[in-house]
Each structure stands twice: as structure tokens, then as C-alpha cells.
Amino acid sequence: PFVDLGRNSLPQNWSCVKIGNIPYNVTSEELLEFLGKNSNIVPEIFGSIGVHVIMDRSTGKTMDAYVEFMNSKDAWKCVSRRRSRVLGNRHLSLDVVDTADLMKDVFPRAKGIVWDGVVPRPAPDKSEFGAKTEIISREELVLIVQHARTPHRSPFSRKCLQRPFQSLMSIVSKFPWFATDCYTIAQRDYIFQALLQAVDILKRQIKRGRTMPNLDLELLKALLRVGIRCSGFTDSQK
Image (cartoon, rainbow, N blue to C red; front, side, top):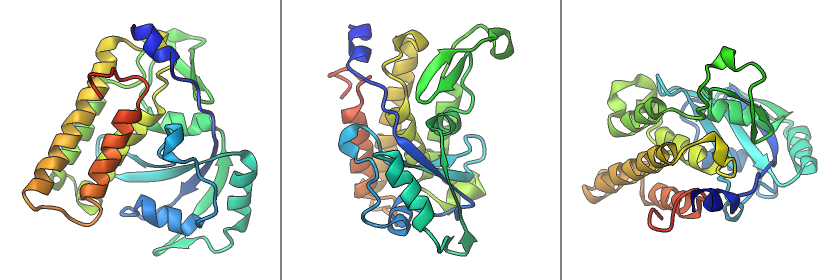
């Protein structure tokens, strides 16, 4: 059943634009507004969240953003038409990149594999990475959940409270669930538990009336949609 579940998932190798030098507190909505309504970004129904804002797992610092487009024509069009590249007080850089760049940043500590687009291939020299294949570790997931639970511990987390939740959404939506030889049931369950904990943290804050800008019911709905649409989770998990 585990292998069959993964086989229901197919590699989704969309065209990708990397946006650098973004403001630390930028939201996905601000990036979408900057790119324009007709940018033809991959919609959620295809299993992608479209916009991925990368967070450093250790510090909670906002890094770069990636936007997935339906085709390369739209990606190049986006880059060429953004003549004014200022967002907030930052001058942004926009580049069309290989999807492997996105995967390397969403899974920065992956071991035993190299990325061929969104497909994990065995590393040519596993001695460099160790014998174990691991796309994301339990420790990384714990760090992300800690940033969501206690953002005051990091000055970067305080600046953008939604970032740990978005990071988990990127992990769940971009994880190569189709590559069942690259992860175990236990590793799948670690990811599920991290998402479940994030949902619980956000739900508790909303119930206590602690909603803040960008940390609200809409974010909770987005987290739930990512989990429900995940091809790697079982029906009972969903």
C-alpha cells in the first residue's frame, strides 16, 4: 500500500523563477501582487502552492523566494516584464532557474541524492553524503515547528510569523512522494506529524484570539489544503 500510494503521485516539473533580495517580512500575497494577476502561476489544484519563500531552519531567517509557472514562456515573460523590480525598500533580482535549484533550497540537507529537476537520483559518490538516503531529517522538522511555536526566540521569526508554516507547506507540496525508494514510512510520518503540530499551534492561537496579520484563519485553511492534497499521506492521515 505504501508503494501504491507513492505511485499515485507524479513528478511535477514546473518552470521556476527565483526572486532574490526579498524583504524579510514579505508575504506570498505581496509577491503575487508584484508579479501581477495574469502571471499564470501554478494553481493549488495541481498540488503546488505556487510561491515558495525559503526559510533558514536554524535561524528562521527569510532567504530567497521561488515562483512556479505553468510553462517556460510564462516564466521568461514574467522576468522580462518586471522592469520595476522594487518591493518595499529592496531591489529584487529575478532569474529563470532549473527546478533543481528550488528543490535544493527546500531540502538543503538532503543526503545520498542529487536533484534532476524534481526527481531525486542516487548520488554518484555516496561517500560524500554518507550511505544513508535522507531528503529531510526529523531534526530539521523539529526546528521548523519550534520556530512556529516560539517565534520570540529568533529575531528573524518575530519579523515574519507565518514563515515556518509556509516552510512546512513547501516541504509537503514539493516532497518527491513518487520516489518511494528514497524515504521510509517513518520519514513520511515525521513530515505528517510536523504539519499536524503546525496546524494545532495555529488553531490554538486562533481560538485564543491571538490572530495577527498573516497568521490567521486563511493560513490555517492553506495548511489544511496542503495536507489534504498530499499524495503521500494516507486517507486516515488526511
